[in-house]
Length: 287
Image (cartoon, rainbow, N blue to C red):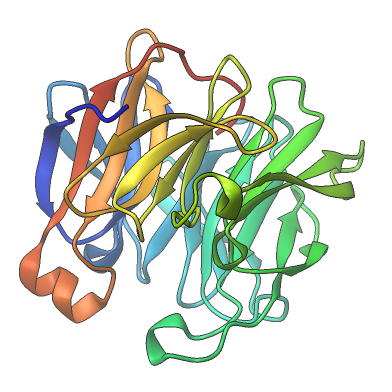
């Protein structure tokens, strides 16, 4: 199942939130506080520098970029060269904010750690936060364990989030007002193979309804279908923290990889890369 990736760019601190948009891959580089974009030939540009660590990315219907600001728990907007605050999530998020998906209406679904991962705190459940355009943020799902990579199906009816520390993908129906209902397990990653427990970090959806899951603990990206059957696996030589389908035909899999996720080590080693590999089935849905 495993295939060889190619390194598109390297020497970064920690790459997260990859998004294919307008012919380029946009992503966050945590510890230089930058949102970057790279084309398929490896030409990279700094889009914006943020005061705090940027993480999840998305776009509003008006074309402005939404950026999760992790450490101060804010949602920012970048438009016409200016950064502005959309929402303060600090009253709802119980630790750093992380990944996000933005739907076609501009509704932003933002996850958060729930506990201090790098200080060794015990795992605690947290919530998924919804920010509707022009409205105060609200909680739309509770008791989720480190909600992370999130996708929305092409019919805009289902949201699927990776619960990193529950090792599962969890699906919800999306109501007309953006709230969530009918919670269910989409795939339990603990049951894929005996003795093999990947943890979902970043995820992306393809045109056959399967989900690519970046798993930093197992140094691979796996393609799973609803119910949890393993369809494909791409192994890398370091942690795989996020993935995104894109490229000219939508079937280039971009993988954010790094040796470590702690700030001191990431700044010192700069082991973060964007790696690429072509797969058979193109992207679908959001992000």
